[in-house]
View (tube, rainbow, N blue to C red):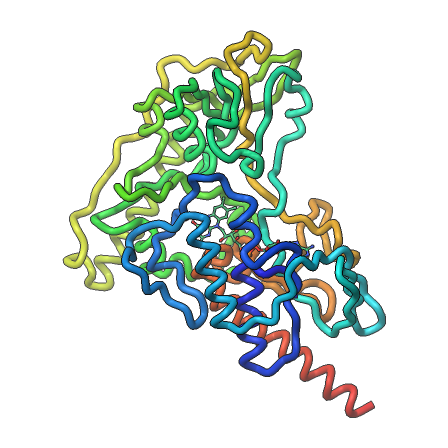
Length: 411
Ligand SMILES: Cc1cc2nc3c(=O)[nH]c(=O)nc-3n(C[C@H](O)[C@H](O)[C@H](O)COP(=O)(O)OP(=O)(O)OC[C@H]3O[C@@H](n4cnc5c(N)ncnc54)[C@H](O)[C@@H]3O)c2cc1C
């Protein structure tokens, strides 16, 4: 097993239940990504009651609160102890190579030969920064969510945040509150209210069964796997952080960053259409929730249906910004993340560098994966989503090992 985040530890728990001998190799400490790769103010956007792991439900005093990164690390630490996971920390996997019917795994602390390898090394190892960043003038400081910690690390002056998903809207709000003028470049995005009809909007995703939808029931799986994270933030006030909230604060909105030419950032027009599409999709989703509540007799458990003001289109939104003019001093690339498989010497990546797999069963015998977007269900990358996925994937893995053993005994 590679990776001691919640995914690797959940898989370990199911392997232990089946008495399958294994080891969890972790390059840092347990919950490394929550300790090293999150900005200071980050809180989960899923409520605490939802942070359930196999055999470990949330039992703290604030079920409706949102954990800080430190609290998530503590939760995963506790889970590692509850699961009694055989973790080897400070053990970086540097290569996984097929060798006859086994895999040779090389690490910073020695080698292993194993019949199966499970990749639980995370979906968000590297910040995805578009190639146009090469055109940013050297006078501008550039940050990704991995090197951004808090606004104090940024130079004084204006900030361009690129990306209007959860990370982008959260960082835009925080940086604006530090007194720096913020421009947010927004492309296609997912708008959600924090609460709907008196319940956390993620309660609706969970209760209505939408998050449980299986990967093989989704029409456009490629698109579902690429869907950006919703514009949400976890605060004690349970406030909504959509584009209207950012505009009200004073954040300037511009279109999608198309390119940077001669020191000028050029943005797409058509914000009205982009906003209308996000509003429409949100309305459709909320209508689905209403329909579910009606059909299941839950209508009286929740408040009356709500509708939300359409996203306000700025009266004037510049189509370009001269990055050499001095108004923008830094750029934060909130443009997503991707996995790092630089150490995987098995030909299982497609032309886009994505792992070829069917619900976590990778396109090479004995190789498995967990923790990737919509791996087996819409909820796959979320903490509460791992239990069902890990159970299924370990079921398959156990079947594979049993089949192999049967073959060996017949030989
Ligand atoms: C900014 C952000 C916010 C998120 N917010 C939420 C949220 O609100 N709610 C929610 O449920 N989920 C959230 N997630 C999604 C999800 O919970 C995380 O991505 C989670 O960290 C995934 O768990 P994992 O175990 O799959 O991967 P990780 O936690 O990334 O664990 C992978 C582990 O593998 C290790 N590793 C990687 N490569 C190697 C190697 N070569 N050798 C050895 N070890 C290696 C890493 O050090 C790491 O410890 C968020 C993710 C991000 C990035």
